[in-house]
Length: 257
Image (cartoon, rainbow, N blue to C red; front, side):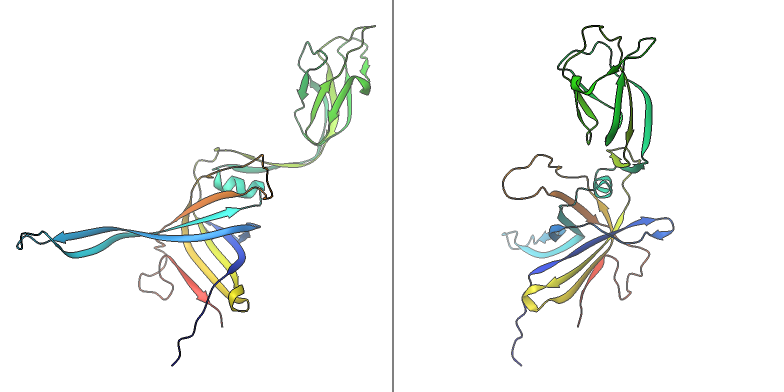
């Protein structure tokens, strides 16, 4: 029988689920992932004979086999960052601020960051008994960032500081870095297509992994490529599956069809 040649050029979706006391959470697609690879390692042990005078190696065997996965993510959303930064993701509802005190002693050229981003309908008044509104020609607001720069201050009459800000702000999501007690173990599922073989489907499942911390968080980029987040995983033995079962205890690769 002639040897059938098969080649692989892969694209696809990388999904993760979190291990919890109640089982796996629903699977979540990590968005665009430009690279995904695995590497197996083991410790090597050997014995050299003591009878020939040459001390040559007569036995070698491996112990402690391991599997490590690496990926490059391009979706910089709070859930992805939280997972690989031992962070905590949260959401904040839209709201209204009526009396936020700005730093005292502000002068022209000073920059101030409000307590919330996504600002609209900003009104700044001074602290006089009869408050005076600081007109918009005296400051420059960057509403998306909640940042403003003092351009000038009235001279007659001079305002009474500190200034007080009132505004509305948009809903937002955030991740607090390195704030979680521990990193949760995950399960990995890759749903790929082999472009070298007419889009043949391939599935890779790794049952239990410990995710590493972000290797790089690129925030300012140049050139022609979008930023990527390199991440890594270390596979763990999934003892919930039988050692001699059809699924194994680390993972499997499925060629469909």
